[in-house]
Length: 171
Image (cartoon, rainbow, N blue to C red; front, side):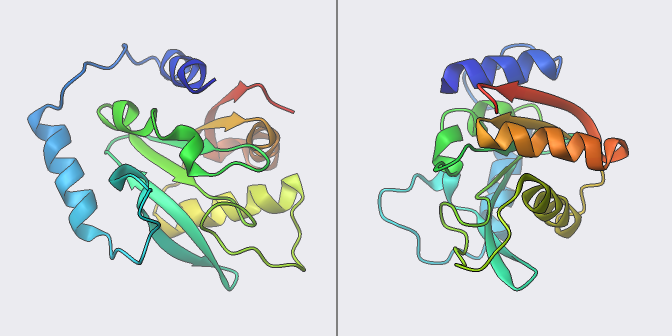
């Protein structure tokens, strides 16, 4: 499934299949991204590429992985998933684009409040708020499973902010 998502994202974004290896610009970006992250305690098993940062959205800590540079592509996991879903996609995509993978509210390393609105619309607004906090006005959105429903909701709520939507095994 992960390989299919990566291929679909690359095709939808008009990007050639990524080269294996890192060019100087990508290496500099990776160094900058890693240096700018205040690294809280992450689980030992979590690969460095998935160790992001936390942003405060509506009083909730949301875990965000932000790698690469250029036009942004946002990766939204499915129900019960988290950024781990995209562990094999983030690095190759970040060679060509700015990649933002978000642990949605209630999942992964983000807060899990009992009394929260987890609807597609609420999660879409949360993703827009995360993008605002990162200074991203417009992005390509890739949604897997439940994340696909959120991606579709984003496109309907604010089409001027969504360059494209790619759905993989989506609701």
